[in-house]
Image 1 (cartoon, helix red, strand yellow):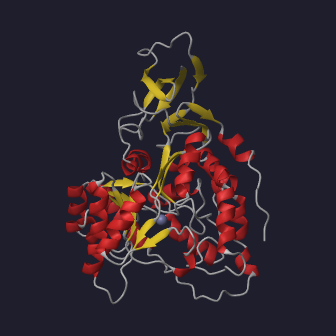
Image 2 (spheres, protein in one colour; image 1 turned 90 degrees about the vertical axis):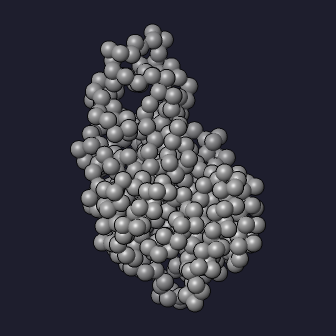
Image 3 (cartoon, protein in one colour; image 1 turned 180 degrees about the horizontal axis):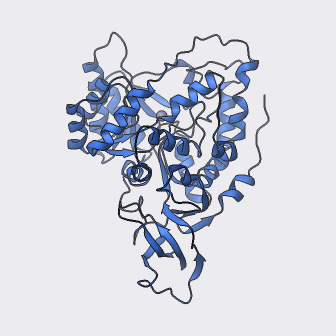
Length: 441
Ligand SMILES: [Zn+2]
């Protein structure tokens, strides 16, 4: 038994902070939470003096991809540099660094992640995380069921499986369900010339098949009409902010009626813009805890000849996404914080803290951001009963902070210790002990 004594507890339920709190942890669960005068500390307990600290639930990144490094070579469908680094080499390097990536999450205070789409080998990452001490809890979707497959991502074990009909959609979902994913992910990219209705039928077939097996469905749909069609077809989670148009009342009502979770992913566009625009500005925590292998590649663009494929990335309308997030938050829609980490410029672990800054710029309060990053993420994982708040009976995933997170959202970076399943980690030691593992091309 371990007793964390004397911190100010922000338990994530939305109630007022509790001063001079006691948290008792037995094994991997929270045995008791209360004030010092309510909770007797058992004499055999190991006492951690947490006075002067703040305790918050462990953070959850509700949208990441382990098959992407965050570096320049990780999305050849966006910028094709395969003649500089073959895609197979990029994937091999990523797989080699997975234990390191897992540790970066814990060091960043992220005790759970949702991998919303990747090759079948990402199921092995979930297995590895279960056996590894400095690792977040990992929920996995497996291959994305996609209405489009970029040819550059074709491998023996591709991150996406393209489906062209409701029959193919059902068969593919069954194939992924055989690996026991935590969620099913659909990449809903409406193609020009094909009606939205026929593609929605393909998406609906996937969702029905998944729901019949009791598995919830996350859908990538960044345009308002596509997102609306996805939710009408049964989507449980929208993987991204709506970026093309302001949300309307009918859409808000639909999300509330269906209890849909809306994942933010504001930071991913910024990452692409900074790296491809050669104006990278790393935050302090990105410099400290970001994968140096990925960060090193950011400068390569300046040295490389102009790439052959025209850059397909569309500039993101920050104003619309920010406006929508604020509107949905005010309307009472469940928000989850997610980064889309692994995409170019979005670093596994620390990117979530930049996401929080952008959520704050959109007008969310520190309390709302913290709720999205804890309870919201637990909803995406389907594990609200065990995760997302610091309460008796839940898994002992929480952070000890050096500063008040409700005063300033950047205080969530000031992590003194991260606790996952009752195990205590020093973020500084985790960040420092990790050497670079791959030689540069
Ligand atoms: Zn994604």
